[in-house]
Length: 488
Image (cartoon, rainbow, N blue to C red; front, side):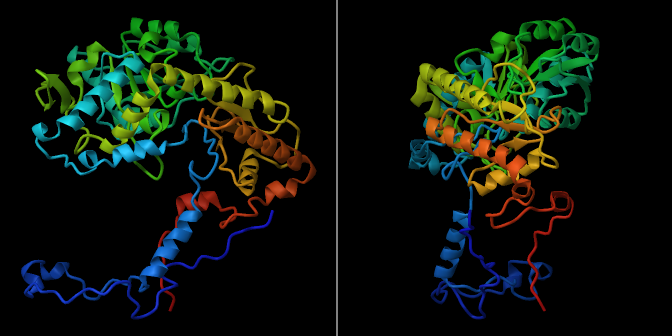
């Protein structure tokens, strides 16, 4: 394949002295000494060295850059654990309705009854989907939801006069789980996975004790496997006095089929930007609402959206609350998109989402099993995990496969996660992709497996057709150079 990319000059390189993008009229506001407004020590001594370009150059530059972006709108995005599904455009239109797009977070409640009503209904829907008694929309990301959930658990134990300090986590957990525990000043207790990829029950029994505050678990887990022992797991944790936390990153597999609350979980976070088809990436926007059982209700962050006598309000009257966790009320425009998604699909539609996602992942698992190692001989849920190439190809690793995928114009799946799979390749096809797209992906993966054996240099030198070739990823992570410097 030949590269279709050409060199794109930096906006600074296109700069020409004196070139401007707009002509502004002379100001008719009387001039004032600038130091009367801004202290002299805060004023620049010279203008900033910004690029000097025309409007058309600016538009063409950023349009050209946007064409180099990869997204779910431009191609298949099988990023495992991230649920990169298509974002319906009707939801974008709803989020842009003036009554929603032009409100302000500091408006009085009586002037935003429609917005508060939508939020109240959404948190009610999410609580029902999760099998919980209530929900807060405030967290602005999955990790932020985790932080909120563990804070709630800690507040619950402290209200009972208990200073439980340990949170148990399986070795297949998302990296945010132990980070969340540490940020809450608690101790991480890691337990190994069983031979079938689920929780090792004996290890869990040995780990629980009087210091156990909670057990954090994803079900299905990061191996894409549903733990059929979940009720026994819940019983072990509850008997020890701990609570069960559900990491909802993989909830796309269970919508309408089972609920965390029915499994025995006490608190759950959803990723609206994953499961409920809202945009995500680049640090935002995201949303990680928390659903809780009745025992955690008093500790929910304020304000709480309430309905009384037909009027919606933001209540701060929660003496046991963990307090505010965000300056304003989460990411409002994300709520709108998720609300539209749930209302559009309804209960039967949500159930079909999971059925299709699970069916597609198992189809990929079966079709690629001859070329890639399957670490667990089980049906998967919404995503499948391989352990590198099946046929021995000297020197070829999962990273090389991922880089070669780029040459075929597809975004690679997640690699080297979960950590307990040495050459992990995690594929999540989602329910929004057609069979034709999935079949093309399968054919591409089979072709790459053949290349690894017959033409290994193709993989070792990949990618060949991208703007940026293979980077020194360790150096890029430890010593990133993100600043443009003028020559001379």
